Length: 147
Image 1 (spheres, helix red, strand yellow):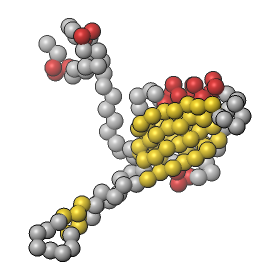
Image 2 (cartoon, rainbow, N blue to C red; image 1 turned 90 degrees about the horizontal axis):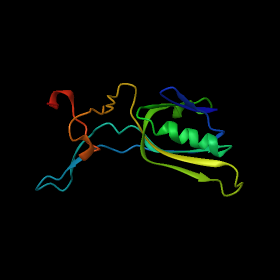
Image 3 (cartoon, rainbow, N blue to C red; image 1 turned 180 degrees about the horizontal axis):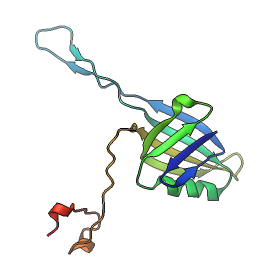
């Protein structure tokens, strides 16, 4: 059984339909004038990124999971049957909710993710009230910049 936790919310899908990851090489290749072969700087690969497809028995459960995953913060993913997939991630890309074509009753939630690890610095912007805020609804000022 798999579960996802973000903040106080715990998500338990009926089934993990798919778990797909990739890790990018971060090696750097250098073309050197006069050499036939490139020089290479070896670097460790990136952490995992990919996609989870989660099955829910009803729309209410899928909706609650979608709302929870839109919270700002890191998600802890634990799968008791596949412990190598356990990780801490942030949502990356789209969260897609769709009705299962086969049953027309079950719901599938597809979540793009990027692993961040347990030592990552995660910055959650704070909204401050300041003059003109309604003119710039997406702007965030840091306390040192408020006059």
